[in-house]
Length: 341
Image 1 (cartoon, helix red, strand yellow):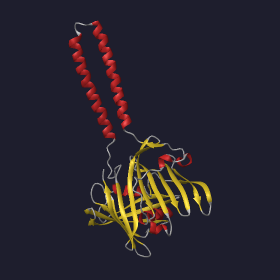
Image 2 (cartoon, rainbow, N blue to C red):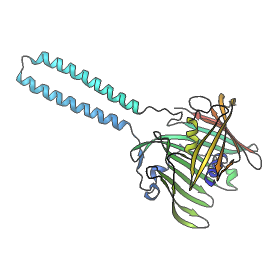
Image 3 (cartoon, rainbow, N blue to C red):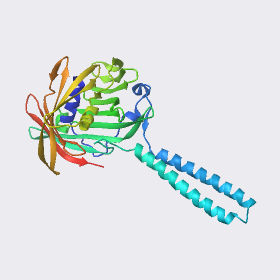
Image 4 (cartoon, rainbow, N blue to C red):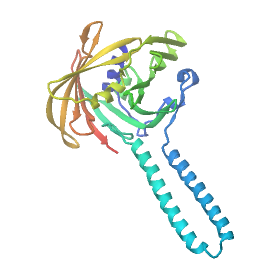
């Protein structure tokens, strides 16, 4: 449960003090952290450019052919060339429209989350500003040639909390939108007593996941390690779970379960839909669904504190409020800003 607790702690006791756009960490990984995986930015415009070049080449060939015929039949070429040119344009227009339509169809996105979306929540503890939480989605990536959604969460400890323990952490996940399961999850941990880079690669065809980790701790110094575990055919990592839950039907009174991978453990997540609620925020009122998550480890369901999550009850289903009761008091994260591309 330690990484589940880490994620919730980062979300609820963190802030993003920088006004700069969030930058991804995965594409700049070392070979050790990439673990043999090819990760790059997905650029759909390349397909269009290639097809446009192909159309140009065909046009040149047709013009060349037309010129040859013109030299042979100068008397008939005026009528024929106009017909050929008209037919050629019609064919090219039809071909181009079909190709672009195909590209658009392959780019159709059926999920509530979209690249460029971002939610910023303002967290308070005993009325004191603890910071701002950022959850969002980067531009689409490719993993070994396959399209991947790129989710992230980021948090820096505020100046007040840094007096006790400094935190500058980030979690990212690359997720397969076809199979609806993760390619990998990445932790970037930069804290007062440790700096760690952790990557878990899910090799579904082999039925295993490989965790690679490198970093520094005050006790161990520099280190590297790797770990393998067998995995079933489906499941989520603890970052993609936040986005995957938005794809579920989420009917009031229902409870949904799915597997979540955490290091070398398989955790059973349970998500209960408690009620509908109209939530007032600084950006106005939203129709929401109130959710309650908990996790089953070694046969028993355990709560990560007493947590409730509010998501918008619309096509976006974005998280706009989190409450967590801990041993002393309650941490409340309210909506600060919302981006919907």
